[in-house]
Amino acid sequence: MDAVTPPGPAPQPHAPRQLSLDVLRTFSILLVLGRHTADIPALPEPAATVLSTLHCGGWIGVDLFFVLSGFLVSGLLFDEHARTGHLRPGRFLLRRAFKIYPAFYAMIALSILAIARRGPLPVKSVLAEVLFFQNYTWGLWPHTWSLAVEEHFYLFLPALLLVLLRLNRGARDPFRLVPAIWLAMAALLLGLRCLNLTRPFGLSTHLMATHLRIDSLMLGVAIAWLFRRRPEVIAALQRHRSRVGLVGAALLAPAFIFELARTPFIWTAGYLEFALGAGLILIALHGALPPNPLTRALAFVGARSYSIYVWHMPLRFWISDKLAARLGLGFLGSSLLFCVSSIALGIGMAALLEQPMLRLRDRLVSV
Image 1 (cartoon, rainbow, N blue to C red):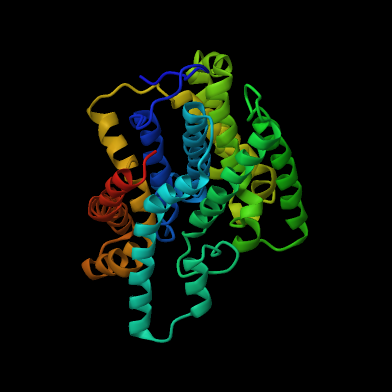
Image 2: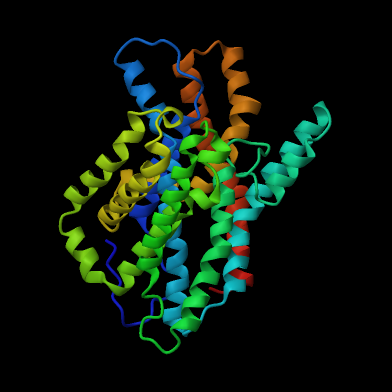
C-alpha cells in the first residue's frame, strides 16, 4: 500500500510503480476508447443509454491523464530537488524524450508512408505532428492533440520550478507558491475560455489549445506538492477515501450527461470542475488498492496506456473498422474488436518499442 511521503528523508530514485495509479490509467484509456468507437446506431435499451453515456463523456479520460501526468512528472522534479538540492531540466527533458518520442514518431512515420502511397502529403499537417503544434491546427490524427499539450507542459514546468528556485533561494520550501500559481492559472484560463462564449464551438479553439487546458496538468503539480509538503492534508482526505472518491466522480458526471460541443458550461467552468474531480479521485485511489490478480491485471494494462493511446486511432482506421466490415460485425461487435485489439496492439508495441527504449534510457540517462 502506498504511503504519503512526508518532508524529511530524500525520496529514493527508481521508486516502484504505483499500482493504484496504473489502475487509474486503465480506466482513463478505457474512457478514451469508449469515446472513439464508431457513432452509436439505434440500439435497444438499456444498451443505448449505457453506450451513449460512455460515448458522451469518454473524452474526459484525457483530463484524468492530464492531472495524473502533472502529478507524476512534477513528483520526479520535486523528488530530484529533495534528493540533490537542485534540478536538471535537460536530463528531465531527455528522459521524457525517451518515453514519448519513439512510439509517437514511429506511428507518425507509418502514417506518412500510408498517406504517401495514396497521394501527396499534407505538409502542414505533417509539420504540426512532428513539431507538436497539432493542438492549434489539424494534424494527421484526431487524438494526438493531447500529446502536444503535455509536450508544452514538459517545457513549461521545469522553467517554472527553476524560476521559483531562483526567487526563493535558501528557503526551506522553494516551491511553496505552487498552489497559488495553480489558483491564478485556473482563474486566468477560465477567463480565456469564457472569451470563447461568443464563438461557435470548434475542437481546436475550445478543447485542444494548451493555453486553455494546461491548468489541469498544473493541478496535478499542486497535488504532488501537497503530498510532499502538506501530508497532513492528504492524510485527512484519505481518511475518507470513499467520500472523496464519490465527490470526485460526481464532479465528472456532467461530462456524461451533457454533450461537449453543445454545452458552454462544459468547455468553460467544466474543464476546471473535471480537473478537480480527477484530482480527488487520484487522492482517494492513491495507495488504496491491494495487489491481487484483478488489480495487477488492470495495472498491467495501465502501465502500457501510452502505447495504447498512441496506436488506437491508426488501428481503428487502418485495420479494425475494415476487418469488422468484412466480417459483417454490428456496432457492438466492431466496438469490442476495436477496444480489445487496441489494448492488445498497445501491449505489443510497448513490449516491442516503448519498454526497450525505457530500459535504454535508464542505462544512458540516470534519474
